[in-house]
Structure formats: C-alpha cells, structure tokens
Amino acid sequence: MITASLTAGGSRKSISSRRLNTGKVPWSKMARSLPLYAGIIGQVNCQFCTMVLQSYLPTYLKEYLKLSLNDNGIYSMLPFLSMIFSKIFFSIVADQLRKRNKLTDTQSVKLFQAIANIGAATSAFCMAKFVTCGNPQLAIVFLLTWGMSFGANASGFFTQLLLIAPRYSGLISSISTGFTYAVNGISPSIISAIIKHGAPSEWRTIWYILFGSNLFCAAFFILFASGKQQKWADAAELSRSETRTEDCQTD
Image (cartoon, rainbow, N blue to C red; front, side, top):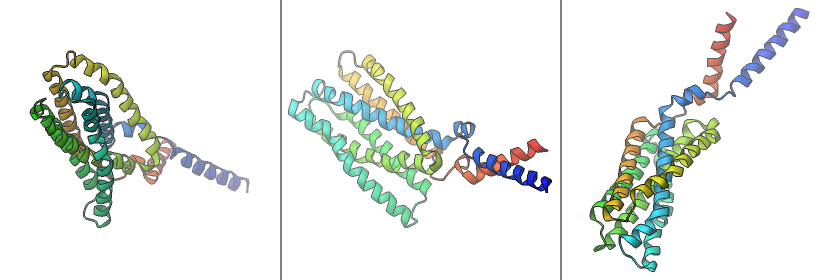
C-alpha cells in the first residue's frame, strides 16, 4: 500500500515535471530556425524602409526635387496613404485564397512578401534611375507603387511570424522588435554619413540601398520562410522530445 502510494506520487511528480518542462523555451532550436530568421529579416527590412521614408523623404523632396512646402507634404504622404488601403486589400485577398485552398499558408506568405519586396525594390530603383528635379511628377507614380506593394508585408512576414510558433508569438515579437530597434538605431548615422552635401549621387545611393535591402529580403524569405507551425513550437513534439530525454537519463 505504501509502495503503491509512493509509485503514484512519483508518477504524479513525473507527469507534473513533464508538463512544466513543455513550457521551457527551445532557445537552441529557435536559434537554428531559418523560417524564424526569414520573418525577422522581413520585419527589420520593413521598419528600416519605413524609417528612411519617414525621416528623409521630405528632405529629399525639398533638396533634390526642389518641391514647394505644399507639394512636399502631398508627395510625402503618398506611400503611407496608399499603404493603408493596400494592407486591407492584400489581407482580404490572402484570406480568400487560403480559405478556398488556392494557396497553402507557406505559399501565401511567400507570395505576398515577394509582392511587397519586389514592388518596393522596383520603385526604389526607378526613383534612383529616372526621377530628377526636371520631372518630379514621376515620383508620384513610384511612391504610390511603393506604398501599394509594400502593404503586402502584413500578409507576408507579419502573418508568418504568427503562424510558425503561436505559443511563442509574444517572445518572437519581442525578439524581432529588438533587432528592428538595433538596426534603426544605427541607420541614421549610416545615412547621415552618405548624405553629406545633398548631392544627387548621394540620394541615389540611398534609393539603391533600399533597392538592395528589399531584394535581399525577398530572396531570403522566398527560400526559407514557412507558414507551417515549427516542430520546436509544437507542445506535443516538445513533450515527446523531453520524455525521450528523461527516459535516456533514467536508463
């Protein structure tokens, strides 16, 4: 009777221990997760590009395109205004495509992230190559194109980060935000080092940086992103893994 009680107690302790263990954060597996890195790179790129436009677009329009104060305000709001509507549009389209089984979750996040990054990269390249103070109206087209395509980020990396590890969504959000703050913290110093005199070549360099940043993000995301919940984020998988570890230690 005493033996049975001890056995039952030990069993309850073992079960309780395993339940607690499943709450452990799989740091090492997260550190080796390419889909996680794809999402983080997507967020860092998105915030970096947004920071550059918010901080330096008005200066570019004033010093390079020689726009009036009124036109400057209108041009500056174009990418952000169009982004509001495109985010809603792409989110609805993405949901409908998945609901009708036209796309898997992985295909969906990759497609919309590609739209965001390739569209932004194309716009940045065109801003660098074709827009001058002699044809500032062209900037309207490319800034609108930037905003309309960049809104697809919401159905790309943002959705992907929620899908790959729902149980760690808060932690992942904090990690990716931390990387974003770090990059945004050093970016103004880098950009200020490039734009010393406000020369046309200096502004073109900034647009080419945005072009390259978006192309890199698109390539990495297409290659390594996933819309599936990762094994390291699966509670059942964690429980089985830790049970095997405990059994090995017992043996």
